[in-house]
Image 1 (tube, rainbow, N blue to C red):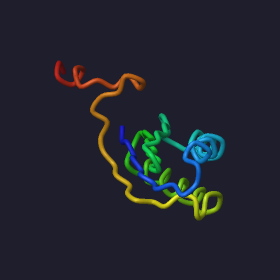
Image 2: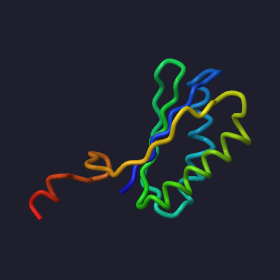
Image 3: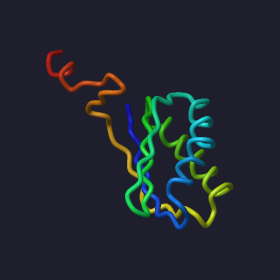
Length: 104
């Protein structure tokens, strides 16, 4: 599994933007191939978006979808700072464990 972490700078109310993401981006992600989970966290005026996908290609497709949604629905309220991708080493919510690979 691949995680996509996007960091945005918010110029509006971060909680209102998180609600907008939950109402708008989450349903779009759920329709996408390879989607596993989506979380949003707030740190001051930064919004951290974490989504998990089956593959890098799925994650990149999700990234494009999110960028389109932000551009069309949150223009001027969110500024993309960074997007990163990484292999999920373990996740309590997704049932991924490094222990399983250590014993294999």
